Image (cartoon, rainbow, N blue to C red; front, side):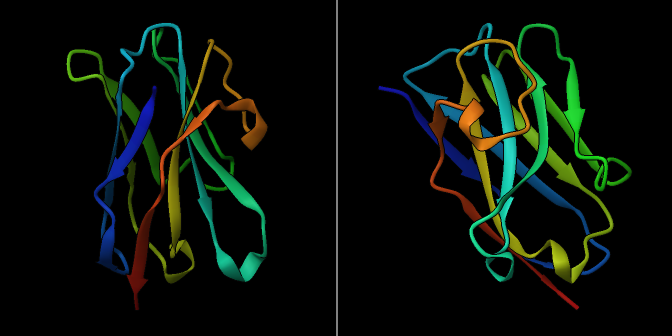
Amino acid sequence: QVQVVESGGGLVQAGGTLSLSCAASGRTFSSDTVGWFRHIPEKGHEFEFVAAILWSEGNTRISDSLKDRVTISRDVAKNTAYLKMNNLKPEDTAVYYCAVRDGAVLSVVTWGYDYWGPGTQVTVSS
């Protein structure tokens, strides 16, 4: 059974940097895609795509609205993916989710992923 877990959330000051990690137990990433989404309650049920990375090649895709502030990477030896967001704003406050897809497709939609972590709350204070 694959379990995906995010870590690194919490309270961050505006202008600061967010660093999140995503690890999976029961699975060694190989030809997978790891994606990051966020849910902002004020925006209803929508999950916003943040970034994704192809595990084997390292190719990435980042949301156009965030690409100047976001970096996605992975450490193959640690079987862990990372999300870094700079210059945080209060509107970045959200629950951030890591998701894993069987297969190498840089999907930007939630249904493109097979396994999800429980999410980690990130709160940006002004």
